[in-house]
Length: 252
Length: 79
Length: 228
Image 1 (cartoon, rainbow over the protein chains, first blue to last red):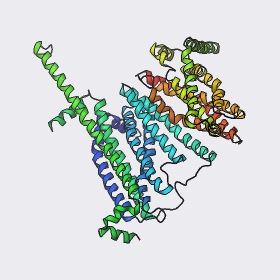
Image 2 (image 1 turned 180 degrees about the vertical axis):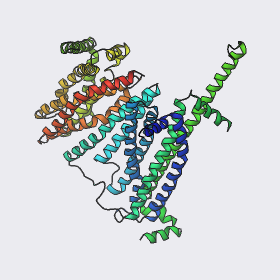
Image 3 (image 1 turned 90 degrees about the vertical axis):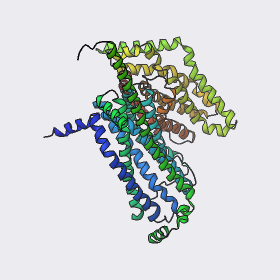
Image 4 (image 1 turned 120 degrees about the vertical axis):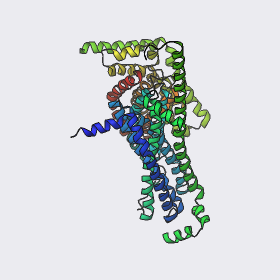
């Protein structure tokens, strides 16, 4: 009775099955991402009223906050996949962890730059050494470290396992950095800026934000599926199922 | 408020929309960056996939050629 | 494996590493020289103003020591990987984590300890008040082993790769941020006449945790990096 779930998972974990599975879901995920993204952009840029304090500058929130959320969400996914890869040595988990890293780094980069572009008109500065911002910067370095370590090895799987180990160390590190920077800020009684005020968002502003968060989730799924498929082809180059795909694509 | 803005946007007051209440130089670069980075993230794996498959096909055809040559020079041991 | 045998293995490991380091004394002097040069450059860049130098002295000394340690970190296992003795160590009956702990200790003695010894000199060059120097030394005594331990895990992870210098710095940066914050925070607090025991306690707690966990993580990382 309870055996069919592991069996099903085991089958999904095999590269050719996952390749087909991801290939079926990928266009749907991308379509949903584009659709929801378009709705969210219309709602956020056109329908939502200007903020009574921040004017129209607050509209950066509709990409900044979803990106910030994705940067952490993807790190969590990467950490879980890295853990599975190290404990059970599943090839698919290694691929998922390593292909999540560039997407996560992209979202972290977007978060930092859009935050900067939002901070300049609102607080009058591009950057402040606040715990939230510093943690995000450290997160970017963690992503870059994982990507760099992965590519430093000649053997792809060995590199993936080493980088997975680093990703897990990073998961422990992020809360420590957040705590220590908070402590540091109280020591240096500098210009404390309230990054997010206590003001409650109105529904007109909230629904585009939530829709955009959903859209970025689907985007991540689509991008991850596309990357994992490519990586599986590269990793399983000698196998029959990959050979068949290569020959089929040459014909069409 | 919202309905007024909707009306303005729909009735084609595009200039006000692009002005973003004076914050255009912050808002639009942020959105541009968002899309540029994500489009790059979408295109990169596609290019890589094409390269991987091209290399794979090249390797396969080399293997095929080698097998053909070997088959032409010596009589095969098994049918 | 009995306790006496384990102890003998530990001392043998430590003695071997220290002997090897002593035979290449020039390598020990390099980080010290580097730290002195960097410290010397700051007054030239910022001007000889006492108050300004005093304000940045603690942070400059800490960051300089960190960079000097990073310079030497790359070499922690490199010669052992080249001659294959690290692989022997992985297969030895003694627990790998313990042996690596000894190697880390030897590395700390040869690179960090000389830096701590010259730290008062570096601090004096930047006019750090004499009363603060004991706190600086205490912070260094707690922060440098922490950095050695964290660095060792990362060095073990890059063991299977060729060039790893810049990568090591990239990987170490996020990990060393808390250590730098608390060590520099203790010195800054002491300088302002504030209680400095809290950050020192945090550093000590982190060090205790790292002493227990880092050798184990280092052993696991080395196993990943060495066998395909």
